[in-house]
Amino acid sequence: MKWLYTYVEQCNSGSSDACLPYQNNTIFYAYSNDIDFDTYRQGVYFMVYYTKKYTSLANVRFDTKQEEEIEYHSDWRSFNASIYSHQPKPSLGYGDKTTGSNLYKVLKKFLNNGKVSLCGAQVLVLSKRYPDESDVSDIISQLRANHVMVRIAVDSIPSGGSNSASLYEMSYQTNGYCAFATGQDLEIAFAYMTEIFRRPYQFIAQNFVVSGSGRIEKPAFEIPASDGFINWCKFAITVQNHTLDNTFVSMNYTIERTDGTHVYEYPSDYSHHLSGTAQTDEFYCNSSLSYKWTMDYHYNTNEQQIYQLRMYNLFYHDFLPLPPFG
Image (tube, rainbow, N blue to C red):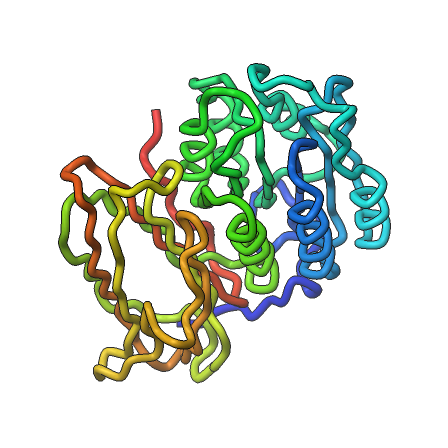
């Protein structure tokens, strides 16, 4: 199969009625005013570092008493200056633990902005205060219609609000993912989310409903790239659809070539650790070979849990099918 090799800086910025993955997609970064300064500072560094090749960028600070406007940029320097000039300030926040986040109001504004293309946009959210809304099907429908992918890092110790389930649902329904973590784990989970901008083309997005103990075996898959291309493939796994709790016991998995040679093993001395509910890493992949993923999981409950697997690389291919919705 022939694949189109397309680095981000080579993306076609021309207009088209069709929504295609290789267009110069917009990056939208939304972060809560309630986020602690260290997480904010790390977030700025990684967001700017990994989006320097993009020319359609937007950002907003939300969860402020006076709602702020989304700012749009055509280069990373302006993007960087805007985020640094809108640092979290407790005096601007709601000042209570009961008010829900205004994130969904902000997302509606972005989806109806009329300034930048929504096609294939990537939305990154850094959240501390939970929203109160439980039904956001209208927003999800609009995101899906434009192939907008949402990834969310959620502080598992909220500053207010009542509903984190809708955050997970929004990321799930757009082939993104949602990581629940706090402290340094939240910083790490978000940093790894931003790294995906280096290899932005998703080629696996699967969800597995599991319970108790068992094994998931993903059939052999190939890397979508020109024959013989060797590079790093990024992947993300999430183990629960809510804040990590003691019903999760362990996971062990391997990524191996179909000839039986292991190329990645978790846990191991070289694998990244689980940061809250998410584990993100990369493996050296060769487009001439086939691979399989085998996961052993253990929960101490028979209640259903959701495992998510996402993989990304440098090569353009069409958008993946979305989960059933509605």
